[in-house]
Image (cartoon, rainbow, N blue to C red; front, top):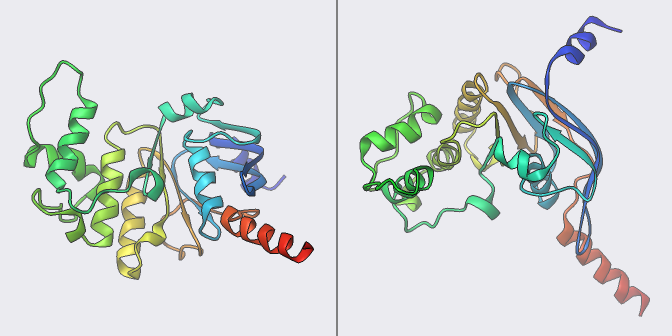
Length: 244
């Protein structure tokens, strides 16, 4: 066995999935597929955007259960246990932020959510913003407390969503897609921030295309058998019409 393969086998795994697949009301969503993701660093799942890729990420974060197969994340195989050791950000179906909400309101809500039920939490100020945002933003400018979400650029908005999801610093952080940031330079900045987080956590994200060499990501895995249930449904509809 090559030395590189032996070293990879010896590396602790954050995720091991075997034969996982998911089926929705209109047909297959993703899979079957196998995955091995090493602990630590940033792993990018490379595949077309759509419901299949989103559902796969949600399975890895314990927000969904596969229809078939097994997924083990950091030693946990039950979705509720995986949920407890992971954070999920940047998925429109789950953490969409209303545009009319201010940064202060969002941070206040998150701090209250994290606090014990008996603790009275005042409205967030700069100290609370710094505590929530600085680990994710690093040296980048932090959003102003009185800014509305609709005023934030793509990079700042996504970093804020990651910061809000990641306050507990769980072992696994899943980020929907780096492609949400359409500017190339800002997307590189985003990847750089994920790489920094990957020094303390296992970070999994997705992209439609491979990330350029030298970005610092630990691994890129091409994922096949990703489907769009809405397209499958449309195809079924066309097939039925053809049969009439």
